[in-house]
Length: 166
Image (cartoon, rainbow, N blue to C red; front, side, top):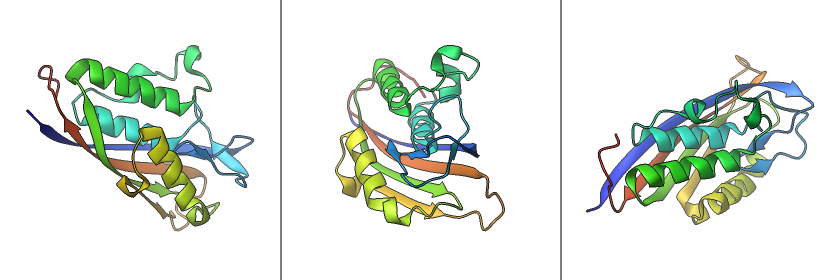
């Protein structure tokens, strides 16, 4: 039996100097600021993880990677994503990501010049064709110039459901 699920996730972090700005697994080369976070602060991957978990009612990444745990300090968000995917597979069976749509809000630096690379990197991390990953960029219109935020919606296909998660 094939089951289709939709998940939604959101993440935000303050920006500080001296940290890299990582989005979708891609480090923005000229950014003078990055996310202040317990992990690498990749809001796009964090929102994706929460979207995946939400599709099955499995909580959020804070439950699995609490910022109070020093073992997760500086953790690469790709490791977080892989762990979340493994957890979902254990809970519900094989899940195929069909499509990902993400929105990143950031005033500076402008992300448009990096759209293709962010999209390609995220698609590669997820083993998807780039055409199945959409990323759009917004500014806060000056309302929140010292923060970065991402929202992600994901469409999933579950081939073999193993129980009633979600």
